[in-house]
Length: 306
Length: 332
Image (cartoon, chains in turn brown, orange):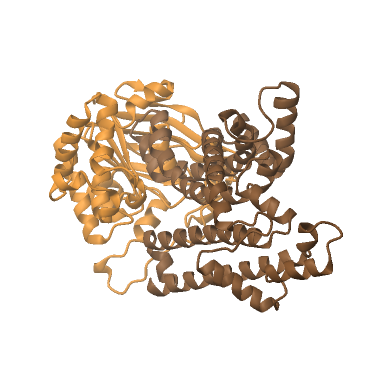
């Protein structure tokens, strides 16, 4: 068990190292931030000064070293554009992202779980086929498209909902639905397959042999067991949602972390992009690590394999 | 003779493929009867239709299966004419069934008391607390030590033998008249098996249960059963009192089965195996299904399937060789 955890932690650290190196190099491929930050016609001296101020005149390995050091000390440096600490910017936006992700998660579960159960109970029937179409659309339609279609209907034609910004519940509806859409399809698919597996189990057969009403067989004996993998996936997806909402937050101008990342990329704000990507990546890596360890604690077979 | 508890007349269950092109005759024209408190053993190799027959009795077949003909009289009512709702009133209350795999039969998320008390709550509308009290008594009756603690534990805290006894407790929870046990001891080791069989026999005596015992173990049949039905390729090829069949089997398949049991007394003699494979149920030979493997096969066997011949009251065989011995052809 100790060996297993050590190895898992090792893999996690390796992933984190590769992620930080990749993002560090990629932002620098996009070009020189000073050309965006200085007015057109700025003197050569101004450019050199600014490059020196941001530490961009130092060799790459020194810059990377400073980045890693700043990450380890929890201080992510200052934004090139806002000139304020990246940490402050990040935590200013985080509550908005959490709110959006939580509402999108609730929506995705409210849609995904009942429709998954229905598809499994009526396997091969109308609801199952309808569910398959829904899953296909959910997993393949890009969120910017859905976002724009929603804006077209509910803002442009009907005038019911605001197309951008944050502050009221009405602002939340469309972004949350757009973000939750993909996950609703993912949760539905897992609920369906998990439910089908449980419905074929011996204890469900015994529940039927006991003469229980079908609602009790499905609602009590099958559903509770089928929910376990869905909850695990939803937990991981919540972290994913906080971090992948870039497109949705951009379409709806939602002031979350995704939008911070988008702005950071637009302005070549290296510290912001690096921080958002590495913090987001760390969250996902840590959650996966925790899940791996929890599974090992629950299932002795995984422990023995190592 | 008084009316039997259960009697099947010409019951057939077929699996039909989605296009309706392939029909598997899993249970074909089975006729048998069982009196109150009696024990019937059903033997046959895997795929011979034993379990399908049991699920036919419970009317809990997979969606592809259809009960195509027959009557199933239980306590004077035909189970095949009952609605799904009426059938639910029978399951678990008047007819109960125990499944093969005790490790998988209990739901891992609910306490033992919850699962044992469930049929009592549903069928007798008992309150949770009285169902819980009944569950404790039931655990005691299946000889689980310290039932008061065990009742609030979960399946993963129990051994395989204990779980199977708990499944037995669920089976008898509503005092059914008939208990069907589908290979209930296959996954238990020999000592636990013997204990469990004794327990079932005691429960049967105490509650006046009729028992249908599905097994492929003829040793268990000899120990437990009054009546025996031998299944081959979906058909009941021989049935009758256990002692009569063991001393003078009428069907060559039964003879072969009895010949494949190891006996201590035989010393170094080799066991006889039955040559060949059981037939494809979707593509049965035109005559007797056992003909391709039968040591006593005749040309008539290959051409024409034998009807059930009654050898004496309550004893019959589906074999042309039994015809001269029969009282009268039941097919006539």
